[in-house]
Length: 111
Length: 115
Image 1 (tube, one colour):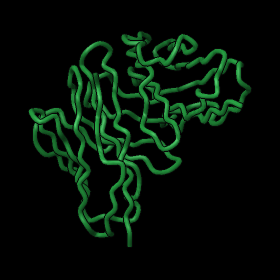
Image 2 (cartoon, each protein chain N blue to C red):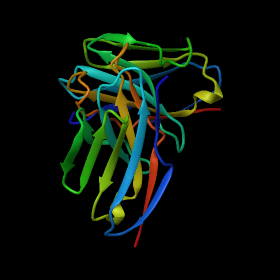
Image 3 (cartoon, chains in turn purple, yellow):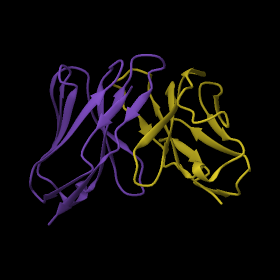
Image 4 (tube, chains in turn blue, cyan):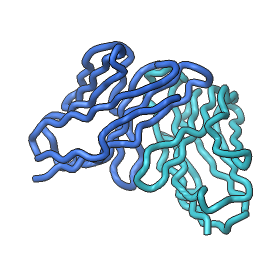
């Protein structure tokens, strides 16, 4: 089967660093992506990892370990506007290349 | 347009009626995706189109759901004989192509409420 697990909620203070973990199980793997979604808004793409290692984009970084079927999103210098839901997603390379999303991690940033 | 456009933005209908949801992807994007999201939940994959073809329709919840894409552009998702459990936000996304690393650009969704 295909599944992704991520924590349901994370709380952190403004200016801090937070890590959101994601473990996945898929029959075929074609990369791990991260999306951000504010309440009432559409998901927006943050990052993508196809190979092991760290990808950095400004305050956000994403890491992948294919041998561990694990990845994480790292948010630095947290701002209030980072309060949102964060979803990891995998592209399954078998069959129709469907995209499977995790249930999402709700991040609360406190002043 | 500059982004993915979905219509209607909201739809309220009675149980048993048919509904049709429309998605206009970003111009030039060959890949198009439909998802369903219930309140506070993750995105449930429904179907993926590469051009006008859908390689995998197994994500559609039941035979009441169907989708098509014509001209490699606009897509419609049709739900027949709607049920209350169909109430959700239906999101459409498009990407430049179907490669795994291509970001999916989402529309604002259609909020469907079945009375």
